[in-house]
Length: 346
Image (cartoon, rainbow, N blue to C red; front, side, top):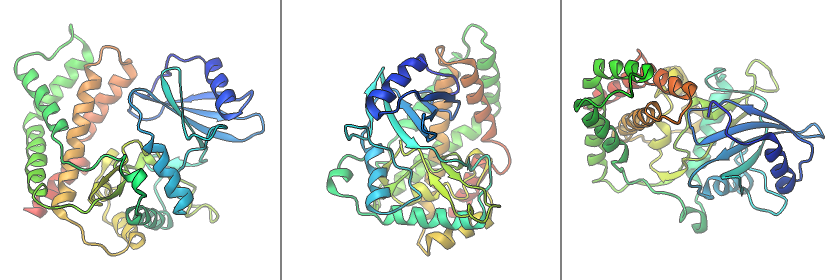
């Protein structure tokens, strides 16, 4: 969310006091991410400690806080950011129409803002390998969504394709919609190819019994925070955050981000090599890897369309959606990389 939610700072302070025992805290909104249903705040407590507060609107699955806590505390995977419990014990609290989760504040930068150093790439690989090796207790694994290769995103994009073919493409002359539709028309054939290939590869994967492992499922550079690689004491420090899309899936669900170019980052072979030094030797299903790259683009296109055509969304959020749409089709970005993966498979 790039604009603050309709929630007063007094209401936030009251909840922090009642749920977490933090009194007289300073609250600062952080315009992060493209998710219009999530808001982030930096919280500075009276004792000098800093925290990260995340508010989620809509349906909430408690496993997105319970599983990271298990990975961090029970499995010792320090790179997994785990939420802090409330004074009553739960890992989240429901207030003001949001689900609240509080985390330690990681003083660093995300992978879009600062490139990972060699040690950090290896550390990320080792951390993700540990996550993928974890056998979750039945009480946790039973609550997680499982990979079904669902067609929700593909059908969503096709609905917009039909809508545009039928001439429903403007909102009373809205300039953002006009620019969006002009871009769509110029790339309509490529968009159709993306959706088709995602479905084609999914049909192949449905014939294979997958080995499911815990997956972050949204492991782009923005969800990996790092310390300063130029500082000797900070070189290996990193934190994997935002586990909202956590699921049980083939490991390629996460591995597709390494070299996948989401956000025009992590698109260099040397980075992949360093990551797999930490991850370790593994067999990679190239069909699954390619499917997930196309499926991610399809999902992003659907969410971008929803945001551009959302009359309740802010101008900043809609402009950001349009920027993300155009960026995906740049050289060495996600579309070009997915096409290269497909050519290698076929």
